[in-house]
Length: 471
Image (cartoon, rainbow, N blue to C red; front, side):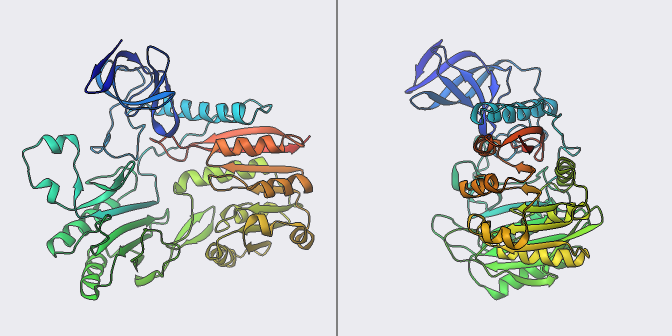
């Protein structure tokens, strides 16, 4: 039943039914409206206080637990609940995989409305913590307080600066992070040492509302080779303090391969239009996969779970089933990792990517790996992937496509349909847009293999690989 309290509704003894989009769970109010609730697990029986009401659903929070789900597990992170990064950390890993697989199936069936083969088993991640190779943290001159800190007697907490993660839906609020379980050591040690040194030396932390302060963001990249990159974004130039901090970092952590910085005074934190400056070491780190080496610079895109990226690419290569005689197009190639990974089994691989810096890296990586049958071209995919381009480089026998979350542009889908390669291997980080594209291709192609891959344990995100073959 429901009762009013301070203009908000409390629903009692509500059973959480399912895991929904963006890491929240789903329940139903007595009158049938959907309720979206964070930090609960399907099977929990709870009292829910609504926070927002929309036309067809509520957003709420659990205020009392009557029964805990059998699928629950104890979160290991002290920041769980306040940090929005690992929303499924309270759910057993095998159930995380179940719901990820279910999401992919539902999207492909409901949005794509296509005939599907039996799914191959979702590939779980061997590492369920400390699997990310890239983390980005924000500096803030006033920290976000969690409920425990609010209830404490320490009145100085709100005045302490923070170095951590943005609170979900609050672009100017930063949760101070003591230990994150997503990136291997020495990531936590580097972050905590930087915060402590900056405070001791009166370095101002950024204020996102007023656009003032010295220290803006911290990025840490690690590689399976053991190499480490650290990049500090400063909001303004202060040479004395900048060099003081950067020298401290390099002396404290001599294992750092690449120490870089940016002076970014614009409205947002994005690096892609910024001049990245090298302070110590070299301007890239090296990743390794099956004997291939890939340079990763500050702006490079590389799958953020190195171990699972290897598994993802093996599945992609297996789906392509190359014999050595095929012309392969790798659309949205990034730094050319998939292209080079399959090159030994192909006659020729053509990679296309919109980011010029990524294509530069792809070409350099091919040289480093002594690969001579890969060619890389930059440009907007919908403009580059045209009749003249295909006439110049040859009709592809196989297309591998790994687009961003928005999926492929309709013009790219139309061109694939027009040239009709025998196979298309579609790698996606968003099965909803993938399903949309598969529906557009259903006239000529049949989906013959599907395998989801979990790249991000403790979150709702899931990759999916699909093989399409001409009907």
